[in-house]
Image 1 (cartoon, rainbow, N blue to C red):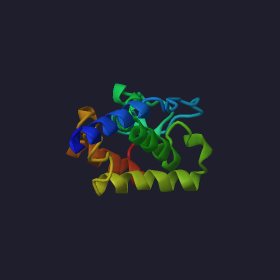
Image 2: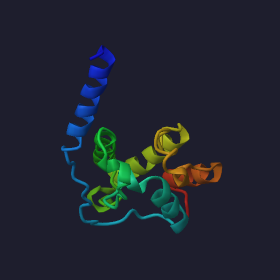
Image 3: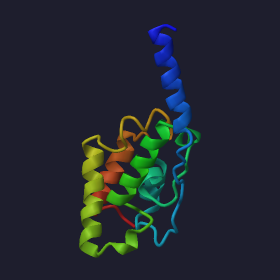
Length: 143
């Protein structure tokens, strides 16, 4: 058997075996929702919620390894850094800091990540969306 055929069989076998690793696709209870104007919430729901809340919509590819490992890690890390479903667990100072971070991440083009928007085109932020989130992050968006 040629070397490339052996490598292809090995890679194929590894991919099949990876499918046996089942990662949890849980959504813990929502204890509270972020306090923000409805238009801000709409943008947050559309662009941020899948990784930064306990209401993740797990896409089909989140069940196919090795992509499932990446999606799972992104959601776990996203929730750890900022979880809008547990907004009530933050004190006022921490909440204000996280709100400001949202604006900074949006302004710098860090969020949503470049690799997220191709599969989630609705998450792409328009200039108006960015301005709205930045205004909210500064604490000046009206309720």
